[in-house]
Image (cartoon, rainbow, N blue to C red):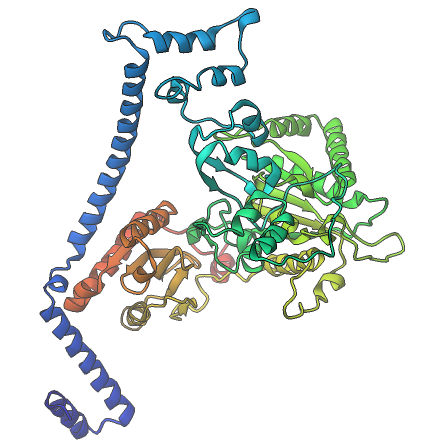
Length: 609
C-alpha cells in the first residue's frame, strides 16, 4: 500500500467503517490529492482565475465586434479608392476616359440605348477589366438570366447557388462557366426541381452496361435532376449548417431532425420562462370526408382557425398548406365567404394578406404541397385533406406523398413554422396509430411518414400536468439529459448543490449544440430556472475553434434570457466553497430582481371569504 494511504486506511479501520464507506473515502482522498498535485505542478492551471477569464472573454467580444466594423470600413474604403483611381481624372474633379465611356454605355437613351447584355459585351476587352464590375461587384440573377446576359467566360471570381436542390442541372451548367469558383448551397432532403408539362425522358440504350469507371460515373450523373445532387456525387469540400434558426421551439424541428437529418440539427432552445403555454404542434381532428378531391369540413375548420388567430391582440403571420389544388381553392373560397359575412374579419384578412416583416413579405398564403418550399411564417396551418368517403371507407392513397420524393415533400411542409403548427386532419386515428415498422434496409415512403407525423403530433398534444408550488415543496430533483459529451464534474456539482444547499437542477439542459451544463431550478416557479452553470472540459475537444464556439454558444444562450455563471475547474478545485458561494449569491441576486409571485389561493384562504 502506498505510504500516503496508510494513515487514512488505518483511521477508517479504527472507526469500524464498512467496506463501501471506506472505499468511497479512500477514492475521494486519492482524487483530491491527485488534483492538488496537478494544480501545484502546472503553472498555467495555477493562474486560472474565473473573474480574469470572464473579463478576457468580455474584452474579446468587444474587440471582435470592433474588428467587424473595421473590416467593413476597410472594404468600403478600398472599393471607393479603386473607383476613384479608375474612373476619375488626376485632379479628382471630373471623369477620365474610362469613367466617361462607362457613363455613356449606361446613360444612352432612345434608339441608341443598349440592353444589359450589350453593355456588358462592350466592356469585355477593356484593359484591367470592365469598370462596370468594379462599380457593381455583386450581381443577383436567375440561372436563365445569367446564361442570357453574361458572356461564356469566367468574369466572376465566385458564383453562389442558393436553393440548389431546386436548380435543374441543365440550367446550372452554363452558369458554372461564368466563374472561377462555385459555392452550392441547398438541402438534399427538400424538393427536387418540378418538371410539370414536360414529357417523360425516354431512356435509350437501356441494355448497354457501363464498362469503365467514367462510364459508371456518367450513368449515375445522367439520373440526377438537380445541381445539388450532382455536386454531392463529386469529391468536393462539404460543410453542413447544423444550427436550426427558424423554429423557436425545438419540437417544431424534432420530427424532421429524427427522420431526415439523423438528429444532426441543433435547434436554439428557448429559455424555460419564455416557453409558450401551448404545444408547438397542435393536432385538430375534425372528422371530415374526402370527396371529389376536396374536404369541405377541413376547409371550414381552417377558416375558423384563421379567424381565431387574426382576432388576437398581436396576430401572427399565417401560412396555410394542403395536399392538392382543389383543397387549396376550397380553403380560399371559405376565407372569402367568411370575409363577406364579417366586415371586421374582412379587414383583418386583407391586412394579413399584405403583411410585411423586417425586409420580407409575410402575407397570409394558401398553397398546395408542391409550392410551399422557401416560405416561412409564425403559424402554419396544415390541412391533411385526405379522409374517409361518405361510406366511411378510408383509402391509403396520398397523391404526391405516394410518389417518388414524397418524404421530401413532407419534410418541406412540416418545417415552415417559427412558432406553432396547427394540424387539421380527417385521417382516422386507428389508421395512423396502427403504423407498421419499416423493414430493415428500406426507406419509409411519404404515407408512412405522414402517419408517423400524426402520431408525433398526438403525443405532443397530450395535456401535461402542470406542477404547483405546493406539490412536493421539499422534494429535490436532479434530472440528467443523455448526451455524448457528458460532464462528470457537472453531475457531481448538481448533486452537491442538491445535497448541501437544497437546490434542484437539470444536468446538460438543452441540446448538444446549446447546452447549459447545470440549470438551477427556480424555488417557487415550477418549470422556470434561476441561473445556468457552464463548466469547462468535455465539449471543447469537439470544436474546431474552441474560443469562437464558446462565445457563440454563450451569446445565443444569453440572447434567450439566460443568466450564466462560469465555473472553471482549476479555480473551483482551489476554492470549492468560494465558487459555490458565488453561485448561490448569483441565484439570490436573480431572485431579488424578480417581482414577488402573486399569493397562492389555497382552499383554507378561500373558505374565509
